[in-house]
Image 1 (cartoon, rainbow, N blue to C red):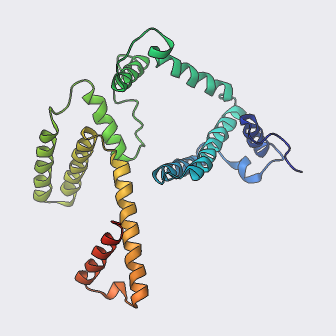
Image 2: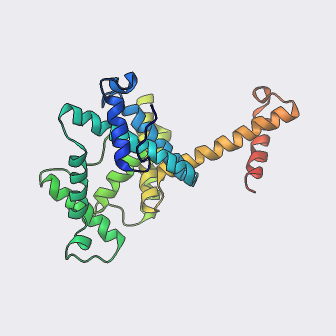
Image 3: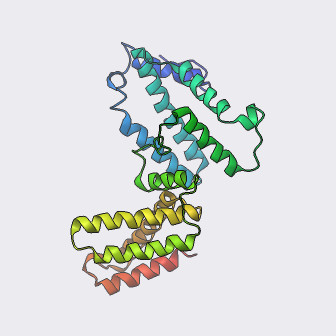
Length: 260
């Protein structure tokens, strides 16, 4: 039977998810739990990021819809269990936005976006209580580079930070030397982690998102390497049987191609 609701309404999505979860609904949807959907939620977040990286508005529109569906799916599961409903979710986020924007919904004055960000974290700390660490609200399951940058940003806001970027770069040189001197695999792994942590600190100070920077580097590598493979197909070459010097010559050709 055709679904005749207005398809550009938010409530229609809520109704569709409820129908899919109903006793006579979709067998797959009915079996899902908060836990089983974790992978799906994460994948949708990454697909939104990919659309943002590509500046693809049509793709972004589609992927945001998929992400919104995942959110409503989790709300429906919680509602069925009697834990909370959509009204509770909306009430929570609306209250939070009003509470954390006193310069809009109250009398507080701010002079910059940086001050807004600082006040936001201060309000979060007040909500958690005086005994809670300022690092406690950073999700521990974030990608490691992003988590590193976030916790460094939190402590920098209370003054625990290098005076200038040169000091962090000097620290990077120190960490490289310690990595080179590591005498066991365990020690090497530890020093490598310290290297990445220091690089994340440098990125933070230079207003670079390390996750985005690495994703873009990955994309550049993918683009160049697949072009190398295409060149080999056109020229009847076997990439795996070429010397490193020959492969590197193709790599330089690919780099030159994508400088255009």
